[in-house]
Length: 80
Image (cartoon, rainbow, N blue to C red; front, side, top):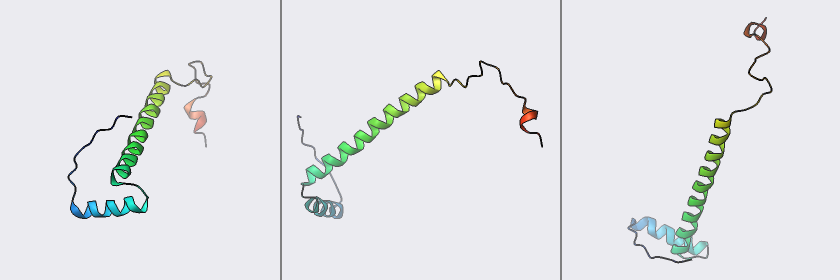
């Protein structure tokens, strides 16, 4: 995988906390950010795939076996 360097501007207190977190996780700050961004983008990809699948299902519709006719009347459903 080809890598590219980037420059970030972060508040000093956030940078300090992130460096400590990276050490606790036995990784570098770059590794910590890379892992988090990979997780975030994978979740977005999975969401978009699920959304497309659900939109296809909604467009297709659902077959309830009624063949266009409803075998009951509203009044029958709400009889007391």
